[in-house]
Image (tube, rainbow, N blue to C red; front, side):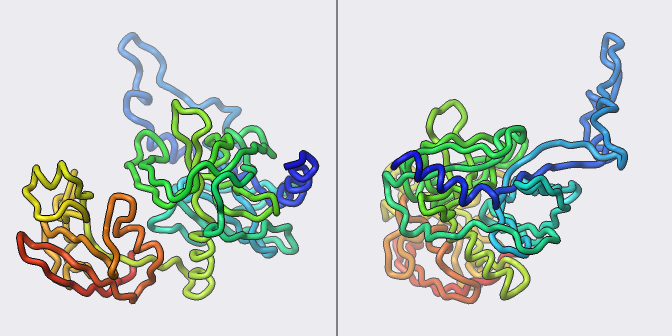
Length: 347
């Protein structure tokens, strides 16, 4: 791809990319500090204090930053959920032309790392949303964002190096791990501050939202497919909120080792099993519970398709809506059974 085309794409997209500055009140920050920071040290050291010059006239402190991009001229912005996860923080949106606005979080996706914000502005430049289902391996792309929360208007280039990837990630070391599936893998450099910025093709269309990197690895970054965000935007427009379907199962993927260890009768599928602090494989009152699914059932088929490590129940849920029916085939011991589940709304 000629350099002139890359420059043309950047000029097309950059005006609609925003920086998100995260601020929190000094009072709230001090309340959340661990005791070891607020008490004198064992050798009489002074307790930690936030520098006075870091606190503005309203008592607010900048604690982080991220990226986003405008998708509607009336101020609708897409970003990552983990960028705007704290309901007690304030989010200032810095436009490419230098203007500042207060950002209001309209919705956070309960499953995907996606959030939708709004600023009070009109006639804004927008990033056109593409179709992530048409992304191809080797396709050239650009990742645009606010690298490390410091360097605005940062661009990196690369190619699509993998599709439908799944990883387990956390927004920070203290946050719980979350499985992200259906991701777009790229070798374009993505830094923490790039989170929420657009991954665009050479037509200047957003095909993903920059989401995660693998620490310690080089040229290994991931983006959420833009079609998931398009679905969330449509839900917000139609229902005033993001509606995601709930099944109500916890499970582990069945392989040969698990089959032998648990003495199962099938070598693929999902073993319904609570794990960690969640000791119930079937959530009480959930659609799965109402359909009669029980702990240690092995669900091996969904809507006529085989369940595997590459295609789990979660992958089916990605393409389904509240009220849809999910037809499952399962083994309970040596007995084969069927269950029809009507998906409810995840709260």
